[in-house]
Every structure is written in C-alpha cells, then in structure tokens.
Image 1: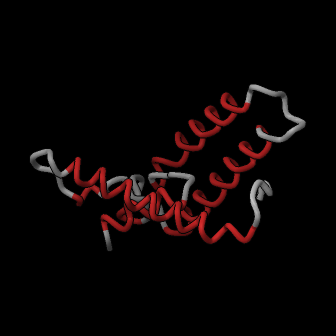
Image 2: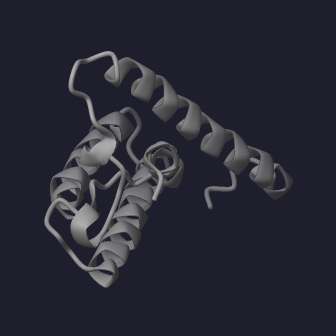
Image 3: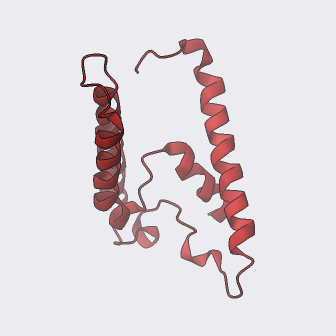
Amino acid sequence: MGRRFPARELPAYIGAQLIGGIVGAAVLYVIARGKPGFDLAGGFAANGYGIHSPGQYALQACAITEVVLTFMFLMIILGALDRHAPQGFAPIAIGFGLTLVHLIGIPITNLSVNPARSTGPAVIVGG
C-alpha cells in the first residue's frame, strides 16, 4: 500500500512473514512447555471468536474488530511515515497507536494487527 517495494515481491514477503510467524510461535511453544503444567488449552495467544475469544464475542464482531483495528493501525503507520509528516515523531504515533488498538482488541480477539503473527499461534494450537 505504501509503494515501498515492487508488487512482484509481495508473494515472497507474505511467505516470509507467515514462515516467521510460525517459527516464532514454535520457539515460544518449546519454551512454554518447559514449565510444569503448561497446556495449549489456553489458546497460546491465538486469535479467536466464540469460546476462543477472551470476551466470548461472535465471529462477525471479531472479524469486524480485526479488520477495522488493523486498517486503523496501517493508516497510522502510513500517515506517520509520509514525507509530509513531521520528522522524528513516527515512533511516538506508531507506539501509541499500537497500544490503543491492543487495549481495544485484546479483550475481543487477542488482537495482533498482524495476520502473520495471528497465523503462527493458530498453526501451533490447531483446531
């Protein structure tokens, strides 16, 4: 969306992000299962709806939450990094934006605003 790299590189970028998310979740799983009593039944921070939602929200509510908050976060990033934006303030805007969307979304879906980050734990948890 930001036209920062050629569109032909998009499939490799998406693939690398997904592989990174899965490998990262696998590493965390190996670490977490070193604790006595660890159980994947808690969901391992995977996003979810219904019984897998921290607040027991329905699929439609969770899908809307994920799409809207991810979109808003991307708009914050693109706006903060625009060449017309004041220089040096991007980390502040992005950090506060990320905090805000997580405060809103974690109780609903375990929000990640990153599909690759969501995919990693989902693959490890399964189901």
